[in-house]
Image 1 (cartoon, rainbow over the protein chains, first blue to last red):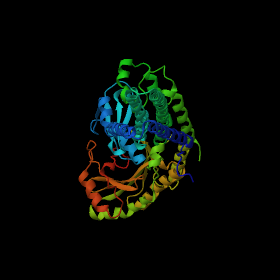
Image 2: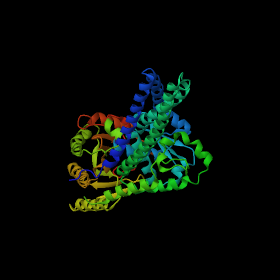
Image 3: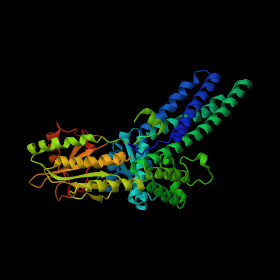
Image 4: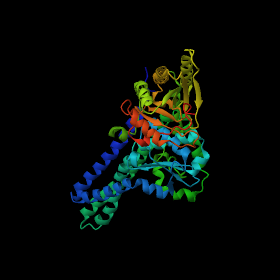
Length: 299
Length: 192
């Protein structure tokens, strides 16, 4: 007897674990390098700064993202359909209901943010509600609820903070390491500086890879929750198709929150898949097609 | 969800707990004695129909199975949220038959691997004044809650009656303690 059709993707989990591990390992290695050359004294200050920034970002994530998107929270009376869908999905997934918000913008998108599942906000734009059918909106909301359940804001904040730490160290190195007293000191500075740039670049790439894997995880969870992977796939094609037609000015304005968006609202042709925070449309559709065929197979 | 699950971004669909449904029979006796609410003989199961042939087959087989007993036919309907309701009807004094039938629906879907798609089951009660209460069972929580739509009212709940029911059946059923989980199910076929 099969009690559930849910199949976890071991490969995806393993890749995600590896990336997270590399991120931490890289950071630790860099700290070790730094303290070897400059002594223990430098490390605590930097750690405190970056951790405070990271904590603030994490704690205020819901308010900041809502402000940046000019979203307003809606009550069940103001948006009964939206609340109805989220109520049912939360009952199906057995999770606390997040707050619901709507942003008045024509860019079709959605995001979820907040420090813990009980302090979360799920936000959709009016453009998304206008363009998508009811079951497609449901797929998108399932994806956002999966972000909440997976605590993606917390995980990505930690990941990003490690990257920011490297960045802080790099600037700091430029400031204080530059006035070296002798040649030896200058050489050390250059070595640390080059290393810090490399660390920053690599940690940036790793954070982006982690973000892409988490998007795939959220797609997968949504497909199994709603039982309609194809509705989510169709929503993705509609949203991505619209992306290209949207004027650049509006897109740039939404950049700060793009890490939590459903589909990246940036039209960056020059950047390769390696730099993108979201997996390619083809990759996402392919995964959803696999889930769909799993669901359709007789047990 | 554990720390590791969060770190690795995996969530497994919650699994339903079905056997608690049978406790409704006991609660029905209490409800009648305490508030005068009697079962109407109508009950319904709400689930999310998955795409694909496997679900359609399971659903058809299920309906054939339930209609084989010669009783009133099981009705299938769609609600505006894309969920499917299977409505079972029995005579109003055969509550245990109704509960058994509802349990069979759940069991069949679970055995076919669609347990995570089950949303809730409702057993309808009414009193001579026309007030209605549905005892709703949430599989994923394993708890019950009352849902009392005001008859003819535009999506209003009779909270006083719901709380009264909670007080009455609290000893017989596991009542959902978190009031925010008392999901409204407007237009559920069992509560017209």
